Image 1 (tube, helix red, strand yellow):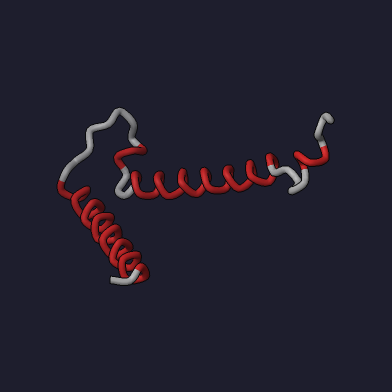
Image 2: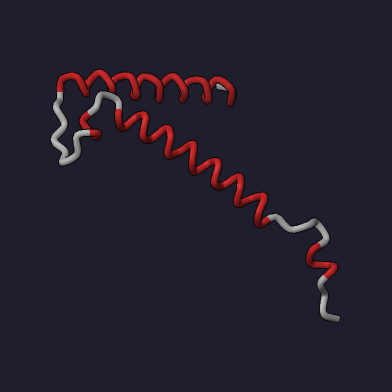
Length: 78
């Protein structure tokens, strides 16, 4: 099995699991102390946006912490 086919199968599997999870939310009431967490699909939306924010923060940190390619050769104390 090729890598592309495995990746596609993983996407299909994850999509099915997400859809089943959202469907189950109709039948299993959540008991949480906050009203907002009882909205339908809250976990999926919250997870998506929190992952998106983590990716953006990681990209920004990558640009901030990046050093030039010759950083260590320029700063030798010899």
